[in-house]
Image (cartoon, rainbow, N blue to C red; front, side, top):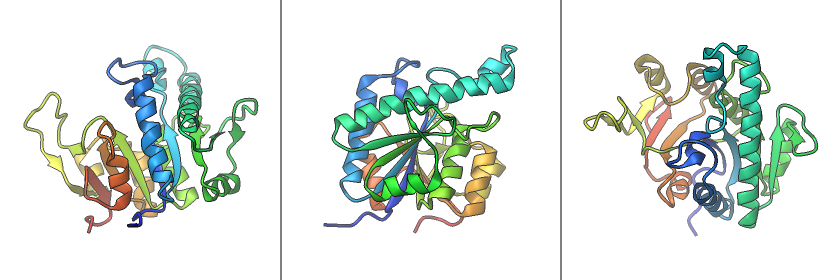
Length: 242
């Protein structure tokens, strides 16, 4: 059997992606689709960690724009990511794979506290590890969490699961003539202001040479294609995908 190109990955999911077409809350069909795709690659021997956002429930930046203290709004957003993490854990375990939620803010009744060595041990045992509550600090996005945990876990690639099939020079929904990039360098993302990750996260990836694959999560099998090394979506790294 053909071996996957990447043996340890982080899957980055936005909270909005889990809400499906509704735009808020959690959509059971989307949760189950993500869970099944994760289980498929775990059964191939890939070690999988997940970072999920909370924008389907609460966005800290939006709260601060309405006059709320930014730190308070961000902490609320961190708690929203824990809700999504528990939902993902339930969906993945329903498909037969052991899963652990680890949070940067301690809440021992529902999740383990994040400890780097313990997280790596879970991965080595074939468990999916879901990182909740961001970095535990306000003013940092879950994109930055994904980049930080990727560096700490020694992952080979970050899989950026989106509702579109890659990175475009404009929103393809409102600009039908938008150009899709097959590959980009980290510095291009910063120079062109592309909405792949925020600048802190992409800089962290660049400093630690952690590549990204931006792909359409709604197409069944795309996660498997990505870890097998097939050219899908948009590859972001120090050099072109070869």
